[in-house]
Image (cartoon, rainbow, N blue to C red; front, top):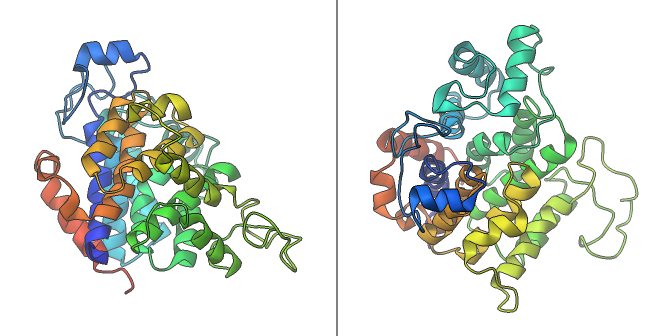
Length: 356
């Protein structure tokens, strides 16, 4: 069984690796075109084609998602925890000062919709932080927020507060925020030593009932029986716990011999290839539950599914990395990752700060 420290480092390195593995074949919605350019099976780092997203970057480098994860990781390490003012200052100085509001621009070769909307509100309209979030439904906040979830893996209430606060800086849709915080809570549980299985959602719902996760529920166990005094939501709580119930439902399907997606990369077709949270999180849960002890299979099936495979591989890599630990990640993926030593050092520093 990996140690807490190894699981934390594995989650972070797994995310960086998943992002970089999909750099070349990112956003191919035509799977025939993907296979024509990269062959029947992508099994390592590749460079983008000159006419594709992230053109000019090298195999093993990160997209802006990986770049933002490292920015968040540095902030957490240098501040000792989540410091919103420091995070916002870094975005102003290190990102917004170097982008122009267009998609094909900025660190990593592409800037997501949520960051473009925030840039316009912050830079062009002069709005303060707290008033720049938009309605993009992508996983951008969840991707950078992986570091927050790892930092507070053993403090679920603090995890939820910090991750929710960080999310709404750029994405204010309540459903997106709820699903993002739920994903972070799942990752925190895995770093803490739990498994992505049929019992995980019950553990999460217990945290709701204890007041540690800010989700409203009118049921005693998330399934049946109205809980006393639970007729009205707690102020500030997310309206529904469904995002916490989804992981175990999908884990049951992934491990049920009567429910098969073959080959597993076709999870992208079942759950959806686009960027939205309601496509990406279920596919990541499926692949992580199915390949809970096999990091390589999990992330490579995420990459080979096409579409928004970068988010899918990054999220899957974090989940499985947390379960196998950093020593369960094939060395070739670490060796081929740009900035691997720097990121390993940051990950170890953050892991050392997790409350034991």
